[in-house]
Amino acid sequence: MSAIAVKPSRPHLLAFLLAMALVVLVLVVATLVFWSIGNKHMPDLIVMPFKSKDQGEWVQREAFLHDDVLPLIGSSELTLDVKNRANEVFRSKPTGFQVCPIGKAGNTTFLMAKKLAALGERMRGRKIALIISSSWFFKIGVPDDSYAGNFSPLQAIRLLKNERLETGLRKRFVKRMQEFPVTLDSHPMLEEYVNNAESDGAWPAFKRTLIRPLIEVQKVMLSWEDTFTTAIDALEIQHSEIASSSEPRDMEWGKKIAQLEAEEAASEPNAPIVTRLMVKGAHDDQFVADMNASREWGDFELLLDTLKSFGAKAMLISVPITGSGMDKHGISGLARDQFYRRFESMSAVRGFPAVTFSDHDMDDGFTIPKSSHFTPRAWLYVDRVLDDFYHDHPLGKESR
Image 1 (tube, rainbow, N blue to C red):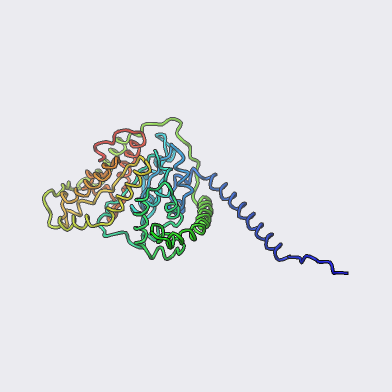
Image 2 (image 1 turned 45 degrees about the vertical axis):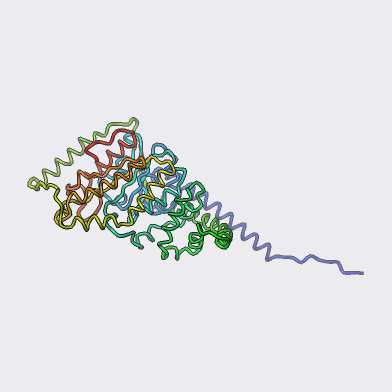
């Protein structure tokens, strides 16, 4: 009589499957909890600046869903604790909208362009305001540490996988990212994807095929990390009830600005009146040559082309140059005006209004000393421009 075959038991396989099921269940429950926390505090997250908001995607995508939210893309001026900062002034929607600040120290036009390209079609038809620092255009290029500190692998993957991104723009983004190899070294999978994204030939195409599913897995993991860190930030930031104004009101910007200017004049009654140096300065030629050689112009062009490609309704704001200091160093208003004209011209060609505040070039009370940050009075000018832009009002001549 033959022996009866007995199927071998596989307790290890069963234990593994149970463990995997438990891990998946924990992740699902944790994700639901994080989503619940984030959604509960989303009104605060939209109006508050914080790191995961700038380098993530959840809050940014949420902000672009609301017509009564104006995304404001910028740099360190959005996080500096200064009175009259736009996100605080418009927090309760006094004129019918809120401002969503997106940015932190070290941000530049290339990083802004990447962020917006990752958002893609969410920009179409949406109003977006951007604050650009004039000081960026007087450096040779973006410092490696600034780029690395603001680099978002999640946004880079979103950008590269955005099928609506024009081929020409994609190639420009890839080429520019490859110029920061140290940052890519920290993300080997993404590095391979970037270095083969636009390469011709069978071998690069084969590598793209192999890498693509791994990049998808990495994107899912980074998205989950974004959800987690945003929820943690939601628990840590100070929350308050945001009571929207029942009826939009006139903020009387002119009166607010005049009052603050009067207070400043009273505190410094003997402040000298300084006029712009409008004859050629000793260092004008070097200033203009250095400005024109800056890589920031190419990045600024990429930013503008990205906004144009996705049909955004953008307004560009430049922090003015500190003219009084420039005059003392032999750099005249004539030379500085070349920056303002180029900034305005590049924006206008693509149909975007530009506000340079060039008439505050000699106003020492417009930017904080030794920085490119707006003072409380300057923020009122910015707030007025944002209000005009959102409501399709003409931008005041005095706010150029």
